[in-house]
Length: 408
Ligand code: NAD
Image 1: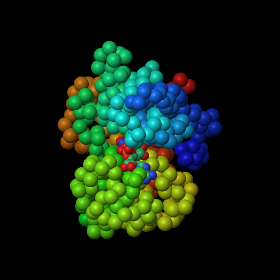
Image 2: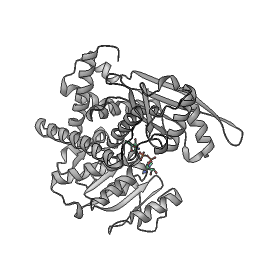
Image 3: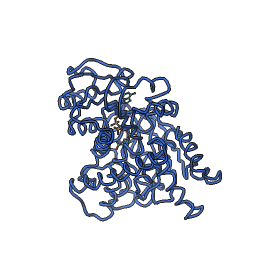
Image 4: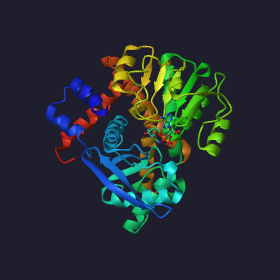
């Protein structure tokens, strides 16, 4: 998917063949074995990956995913998207991504710590505040980042908070980082409502995934007055046309680690949820949720892509024909996370910390700029919002490579 999207834009921009290879092939791809002792005394070996897509604009940046399906191709695609996302928002980074093919729900806390520390040790010469700065993604969180930061710091002999972002605030994390991605989704969906002339107090939203991104996006949209009528996670979904009680739902999920069984609405499958009539649809779980098979059936006005790669190129072709749907593409829509990760890194390097209103104000300024530039280019060149966002990102990386030469 990532390569197909790149090729389309490279054709559009008439990027020479030699330059395409350099833009596409990751600079570094690392595969490591991550052996751990399980609590029952047995030994298990997981596979860990880290891909750094390009170094032309600075160190690389991107999340660490713990999920059983993690594999090198997926990580490489996500690293490429991170590159375009960082360039679109003018952050001084190349893209990276990483992960371990483990299921965090099937590991104890001590086992998770062992996976994280061993994985960090295996990739330690390839990360660092000036080299590559990991962050949380699916299946990882502030605790994972604290373990990574500690393992790296033990190796160096002193505390290095700037090696990861998305840490606990106490250890040099930034206020507002945990909420940043979902908050950005809310902000941009609200901007899209302005563009379409929709009133937020009359709008409805459906959110797939109720993890970090999905839950905060739901709350953020609700704060703009939007009614959240359905949400789901990997274990089930809940639907209530009158609007879900998000506070009760959040408490339920904290207690039960899943939405399944929440009494405040009717049961709904993930497939049905994506096809509900609503104003805003927020896929905030996995890749490839909107496909050639269901793209003609979705019934939203705004598709706000909280997840990375939720829409396949086949689905894109169908949605491009459906002019009533306004797409906020993933590299724009979920960029709030990496923007506040950048703020966290800057604060760590300076050991000078900002308050939440400074963080949110600076976040919204960057998102506003990226949104306006994407919308303007999309209208001027009569291309989709996704193509416009990719053009801005890819063009900047291409220019940087041309200016610098072959090294990065
Ligand atoms: P998370 O692990 O906190 O939450 C993921 C949620 O998706 C969970 O509720 C899980 O149950 C649900 N889910 C998993 N598989 C599903 C399925 N098949 N159907 C429905 N729900 C399913 O992860 P997150 O950090 O919220 O990340 C979600 C997405 O957002 C990913 O694509 C990630 O790459 C992207 N993203 C995250 C961030 C960030 O800051 N966390 C930033 C940018 C992009």
